[in-house]
Length: 141
Image 1 (cartoon, rainbow, N blue to C red):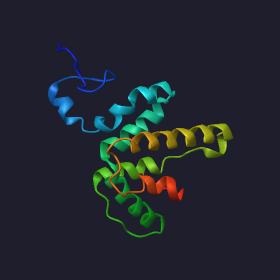
Image 2 (cartoon, rainbow, N blue to C red):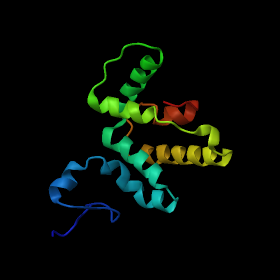
Image 3 (cartoon, rainbow, N blue to C red):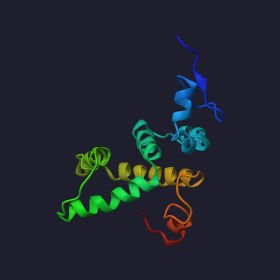
């Protein structure tokens, strides 16, 4: 068994090898906020959502958003395997009619908190809707 390899910046994560640490480009977006997110009570599901975002990056999801809109309108949109996997996740049954209002509120607050934390990193490209545009115009991406 090998010793875990710590993150160079934070104490919140260890990797199985130096190669694995180098390949984990997503962690650069989580690293600065990991302690804050844990302290805020980020659920496992919310953390998985964060990881999905950071693994693929903002440009991927911005591009996927227009493809999902085209699919909703009945257009024949070509998706690669990775995009298809995320569309499957997007189309999961939500059971929203069974959720209490406080659950929706909690999820909305956590989503905004995650966006705020990601704004403090290089996740959003300069001038994108994750930057000042989102907060000044009060719109979503």
